Amino acid sequence: MASIVGGVTTSHIPAVGNAMTNKLEQTPYWKRFFDGYEPVKQWLHDVDPDIAIVVYNDHGLNFFLDKVPTIALGCADRYANADEGWGLQTLASFDGDAQFSWHLAESLIGQEFDITTCQEMLVDHGFIVPMALMWGHLPEWPVKGIPLAINTVQHPIPSAKRLLALGHALRAAIESYPEDLKVVIFGTGGMSHQLQGERAGQIDVDFDLQCMEAICHDPGWLAGLSTTEIMKRAGTEGVEVIMWLAMRGALNADVNVVHKHYHVPVSNTGAGVLVLENAS
Amino acid sequence: MNWKKHDYDDIPGTYVFDGKTANAAYGLNKLLFSFNHEENRQAFAADPGAYADKFGITAAQKAALLDSDYLQLLRLGANIYFLAKLAVPRGFTMQDTGAAFQGITTEEFQAKLDAKAEDLRAKLDAAGGFWNG
Image 1 (cartoon, chains in turn brown, cyan):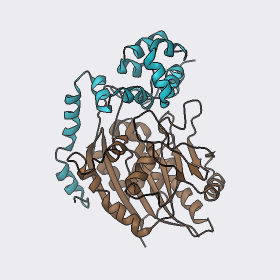
Image 2 (cartoon, rainbow over the protein chains, first blue to last red):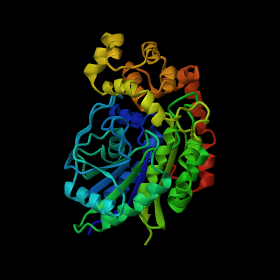
Image 3 (cartoon, each protein chain N blue to C red):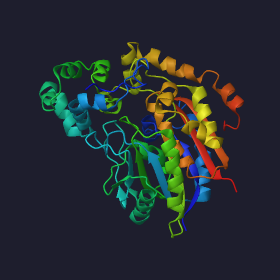
């Protein structure tokens, strides 16, 4: 039976991808940020997952505004990265697991999450940057990846509460798969940042730390906030933090916090990292 | 019929991208989306006006586009993620665009970002349990 080895949250800031491409990890601006991922890499090495389900949002690579699925699941055996117009290096393609994806799709839709299934899906920095942060130091991707794309770009977007519920359903879907697979879930995006408008540069460190505490021990608090309440504190693009709840909902009510790291500013963003395991 | 009002409409200095905006700026965002491809970025660079005319955008949107007026493009419905496909390949960072939105220099904008790190260590210590090297 498939099992969840734990969950990771991380920002997916494009500048992080460029910093890795240009090998800037140990420069003064980046060192503290990247050093904070070393314990995450160690944990991943220890738990040795077979598959990473990456909850992220597409920023206009795979999805244009002609069709905007609220929740889209990759159901392919291969996912390619491509030029997204942001000057990022295009990285190697990822192996998926179509059989597992279609099981997830059947289970999620059976649980009344009416997701969109995708047999072709380009994955952008929202998916790529987390994967590169975790495994970019290795010669090849040691895990399969499954993209779970949430619309946080064009409102109306799903509520925080809905994404916590998606996590609950995702857990049932994973744990009903008969094959022995070790699954890690990444909740990506955030934390507070606003790229647009005269309010660009909005970062709220206190809110970010409150969100990290809530993801660990009180996800219902974050799930209880409206989209507007989150945007007022975290900025319009900071609303991505709701995707962390999809990871959190797939874990036990009680979790062990294996690692907790926060750095600011990273580009225009507050950057948070968590590694959580189910408490036994 | 009027477009519905939302509780996010009055967040200062903020242009939430919703159906009303997406509808008004579909052509503009389609143009910006085309910049995922290098050949389109080059075609735009070679003749911006002719390229813009292919997407059915409004005169005001075209003027803002040709002026590289990022704030005006935002006000006319450009989605920030799509707008980045115009800005970044032309050497503008998100700090440059943030500064442009506020009418300040990039150095001033960066200083405001850096100020967010003040008291960070004390805040992390107060919150407890954070890794710090």
